[in-house]
Length: 285
View (cartoon, rainbow, N blue to C red):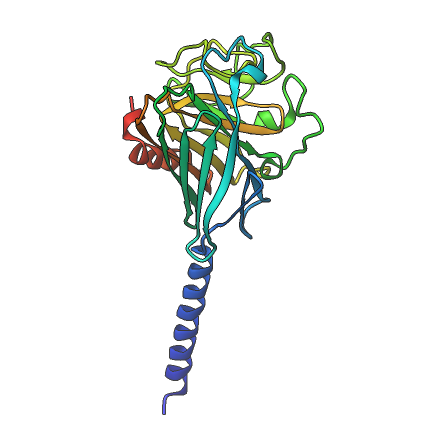
């Protein structure tokens, strides 16, 4: 009997089993949870959990030079379904003007997918123009919130967007520093009225598309996000990075569909861009 043959065969089978287990562990879905208007994304391989104020606010137009209290449309959120095994979260937001917004949130091992349906069952037009998922990235970037209200906080230097289709890290040049509320930095895309964005310093620079995000503390991972359609990119004051989605108002009985992604991937930017372009072909230019 050839002992070495059986030894080699055993080692090969053991190696295959270990490889399969490692691959299965790597493909384990991200964990998503929602409670009291906060969505949390976590996984063992992430630098830390990502908390999202989901949703922070629904907003009226005319917001750039308007007091924030006049911009916000109050809403009440309700958890309709939660299945941690899929994983799946379904939410319903009821706005003060009667508009209903339903959210279906799912996750794979490296992304969270958002499918949003906004509809107006009333006989009056809604002023719901855009909305804010506020993504807190201090733990992911290896920073803190201690300096989040500085003109250029440490976490902002980990953040990026795309200008002229090139990844550009913050702070961009020029860096706006005047607005109704400071600090922060707002980037308004082509086709969106500059009177209808966050009342924080508004950059003259125009993003190429929705994709934006941040690098992890060790630069090995990226958290990136995009919505279609989108209203703005916003670096905020709670160690947050926004890609805020656009609604554009709703006529009586009108329905609009919105979709979004959060990618949590290795920092291979060309691969990330290809993936974004496949998911959001409308934004490719």
